[in-house]
Amino acid sequence: MNQANAIFEKYWGFFALFAWIGLAILLDLVRFTPFAIDEAAARGLLLTWTIADNVVNPIVIFGMPDFRALLFAPVGAYWPGSMLATKIMALTIAFVAVTMLFRWSRRTTDPEVALIASALLLLSPIMVSQVDSLSAGPYILMAFASGAWLDSAYRKDKNYFGGWYFCQMLWIAILTTLHPIALAYPIALAWQWYRNPHAEKKSRHVYIGIAVSVLLTLSMTLGWSEIEFFSNPFAALAEGLQGSIIWSAADLRWVPGIIAGLLLALLISLDFKTLSKDLLGQMILISIAIGVFMPDQSWVLICIALLLYRGTHLVVKFNQSRNKTGRVGQRGIVMGATLFLCAFFMLQDKNHALTIKHAILGPEDEMIQSLMVEAEDPLKPFRAASEWPGRTMLATKRDVLPLPPALDDPEKMLEAVRSVTHIIFNPFIEKNKALADSISALGGETETLALYKAGAIIQVRNNNVPLSTSQRLAKAEIKKDDETKDTQTSLEDTTAEHNVK
Image 1 (cartoon, helix red, strand yellow):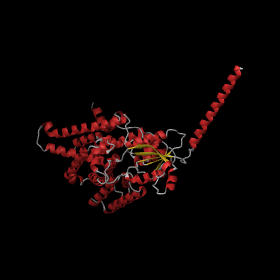
Image 2: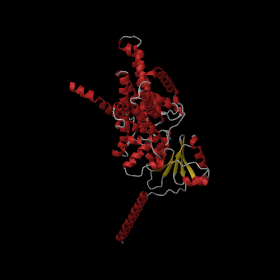
Image 3: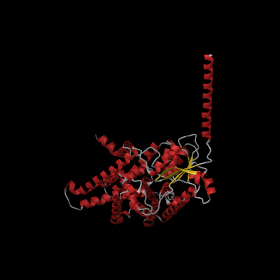
Image 4: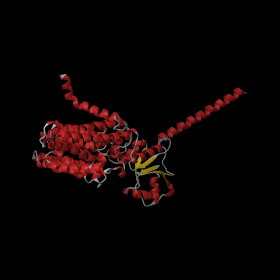
């Protein structure tokens, strides 16, 4: 019995990881179809999968993806094309991130708070949806926690340019490409070395390494093309707390977002002094401050993590300060808040599982699914121009290009669109209105196949998209088989006629 307890205590993390992955798969919390995937993650997957299959990768037409592709490298090397392996890896990274936050909370507060907050974070609908969509949030959380550990290891290292130094600079480069809020890592690191310099020369090396890593990475990726700036942070919080069932403004309930925003502001005001003394706390604070101007679901995950870990600590302190006796008196408020959050999170997770079970798709994925019907015939020319080229290529498994530029000259515009058979985009948003006007000016050269709330699918008539070599060979093979069948039928008819005579 003692030996069994010792084994469990030593390997409980692996048992919890396997249980987390198994439950997520069995309860349909992640899907294994190419839908509901983050566009940047889709491009990273395409890059790693195509490199593994020794074919031309999409970096030529899609541009440089974020360095999430490096984190997808093991999946691309051993299981190219497997969405199951990709989702298992995403679940593992999310669990590792929560484990590192658990250790940080246990070090700064106590094991009870760390355990409650970690369990709630794994249950939260924002964590489930971020894992399912392969979004950047779990990777950023893991990078923040491991970045603080890397800095501690480098400070203990006597070498100025040792392995820990280059690991830290590489980690900064990878993280910078994921999201603007990830800039909190190099900013907090530079501030920490300014406040607590280890050695003058060593500090100078850190500053130079941070500047080179950030500037070189941004010059390669040219910023963050998929980030929407100056949206409503309360709407983002409400969407994150209500899971993946929010697909339009009509579905959004503002109350959870407003409550979470107010609690977040209160928590930061009460706990600012403590968080500002810790490197990981500084990263989280700076990332939340940056993300207010570009709030999305990755930013929401950082906010929810801070609310759970530090909020649970403050609630426990408040509960203990009331001088009540007994388990209920000392932990009554904590137990009530935990049960409420568990029920709320599990209800949203159930809704998420039902959308996966019944194959309910978001507006953009509905359009991509409709386009898949057009791409089903392997002998039919197909090449799409999409607002979401990575996601569209994953779903259709055919050639996909980014959207063409808007041109005022109809002749030049017609020449540009004739290189594709279909165009899928959202003509109702401001950035695509010029392109929509240019396409509408082409008149009968284009046809609207389908119109959705999220956009439209346009077919280009008289396109000059040729059949690929594999398509021509397949078509020739089918023609040869048809001729062989016709010859056999003719011989059978002749033989039958001869026998009759």
